Image (cartoon, rainbow, N blue to C red; front, side, top):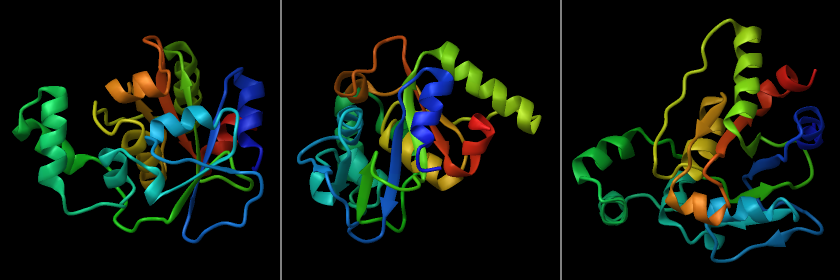
Length: 202
């Protein structure tokens, strides 16, 4: 479903972003390579441009960790998050250990690039996300379980988590994503893996 973002947009009257992880540099035309951005910030750009990102593109240490591009610096990241969020390091450490991240990183991330995406994501009102949860409930006859965290919320809690657990993930965002991705106070983020695309568009 290469046009899944358009199909979801038409059916649910919302904007969607395709996310594709690449092991090698893709041969793509007309894409914009961003520099010195946070992942959440790049998703905003992807509304109007096809975007390609790599390790050098991402300025956010949290996203670098979530995508497996900078491991082995847990103490540094914990200190940064503790200073920014005014949260005790012990609590942050517990959350950090449960945060999803790629153990085997991909080299590139495409946003709204050609081809079948690994997942789609969007920024929606709670009432709109309710519709997706209801469809999921009716299809599978079970509740949707989510893990919510206020750090690495879009890069880790939506993009990485949706790819890794192959399930719907929802996030309230974090201070940075609310500011840089233009997440207004009434908006949440959602990610849907490609294995569930047909559930929502068929």
